Length: 352
Image (cartoon, rainbow, N blue to C red):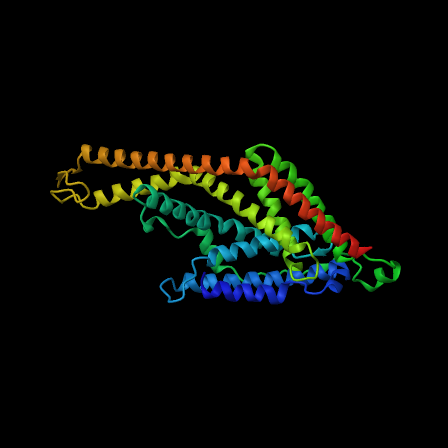
């Protein structure tokens, strides 16, 4: 991981996390606004790092995870905005911009993941990789570069306990610990059935697992005993289910990637119509008519065979991954339920 990732991680630890239990007793909306503001700062820092690399791709300190780090911070902020809508208000335009950033960065990251998996396939089965020229500039990524920085301006809801009038009317406002316990309870109830149902629901389960991880991370340095166990279990499950999802995406996106490779081959062949000996496979080319029918058929056959090999590798890897998940799923689900129950219980005890 590059130096930019380490800097971002240091900022995250210092600015976002709650270090003292007494902060968990404060009104939920007040704590949530502080967390949201700091996540925004981290996201904009990750964006600047990625933009600097995009502007200078041949620089000395390139971080291969720059786009990934930016996307993680986008997701983290969107989760907090979604789950705190009962506490704070933010600008609709800013939320829409954040949604566009998330969608715009998907294609680039999916391509990174696919090429990483194909590199793994190549190392294991000696398959030819698509060339880097397939990574074209994406219009959505260009929009990410050109749009101005995000301005959220989080404000308390009308019924917020942070407002003096409401404090006078209510002797007891909801503390952050109670609010967080309720959110984690809701996410737990959504997640556990998805882990225990069909394989098709595992991706949705992973989304809720990320929600819980993002909710817990700000209190990771507090004095609560159960936070680290819960985070460790959530991270392990997120990684396992993430590997499964990446293999699924590879199967889904592979046809378009292979079509790009075929287009690249045919373009290279057509650009040299006057060459008597074909540079790709040694077949003859008519200077007047271009590549022969046989040469083009050979290209199609080669790409088809490559596609078949990739599909075979993907199927083998996916079957192994899903079999491994079935082996540990029951134990992993029970472990997750236990550590979440412990943390929810601790948070509820704080609010009593």
